[in-house]
Length: 402
Image 1 (cartoon, rainbow, N blue to C red):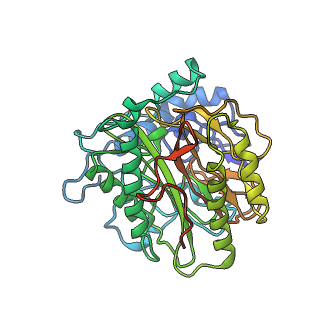
Image 2 (spheres, rainbow, N blue to C red; image 1 turned 90 degrees about the horizontal axis):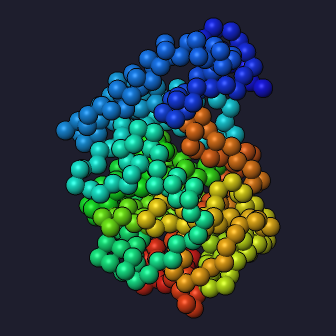
Image 3 (cartoon, rainbow, N blue to C red; image 1 turned 180 degrees about the vertical axis):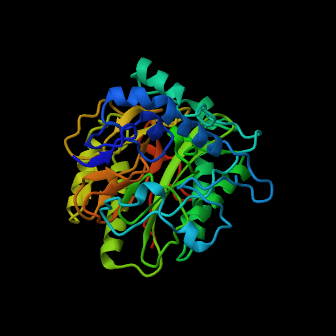
């Protein structure tokens, strides 16, 4: 067990007891030697939470469109010098990374106009989606969507089409030298232009409008000031929430600049894993059977399938039933029926399947530091098969394109 300094008594102790409020607020973990010490010192420690909350609630700066905040060890103004922007966030100093990728600082949270419809978690201090929690506690059935929900002016098809447009805009901007923070800005503004809320923003306090996962990052990478390098592989994961109250979710992994053969093999294998899984989507298919097809596709190319993160039901909720695991011999429940809407998003690794999470409490990386790739679509089960709701226009089936 790792040794930490107790924030109450300053003793060096072996402990995993970290302040839950710090973790919820995405602050560096603060450790205590015991529950008694935590309770005795909480009133003093809680002052740090209040200061951090004031920083997070700083008003948006009119000239830059982002909030200017005092330096908090995690964010800095985009006008700071390059050395400051590329410095490690406070949680990363001394951190044991599994691969060569290193985080940089983040830009402040981008504002959303009051005219944009927001999901319930958008302004919740801890980003909690209470509608999802109620659904999880009270409902085990998979929702069936009909023409009214799908085809309305701001129905589910519209949300998915907006997500497709936003991802295409972001993908065109990706090149060596661009920062993932710039991709976040592009995604954020593209969402605003389409009268959509970027679903990741403040979802359980995720600080950005898109997930950008580079090289060994499996998923949930946080956009920062690091520049994309020649030869990187970058996944861009977009979800849009439209005025009708529906989410559309998709992602793609891009080969940037001059790529190596292993990188190409990995990305193409991830594409084929999703492609082969979607070919199985039709009424009567067991949700658990997708994992076997994905497993066989990945292992045939010497790759592995991450077991931690799964596809999910989506629509009026960002995440709901069904759960869609991507690995072999999973125990997912449910049979596909017309009207079911869900995502399939297998995360494929060049090395082992295991993952760990960075100290930012979001970024999932491979344990061996080897690269990971992913593709995702939101799909609708039809009477005869499936419809890819997040497909490109005039591309009803997935087509590999380097």
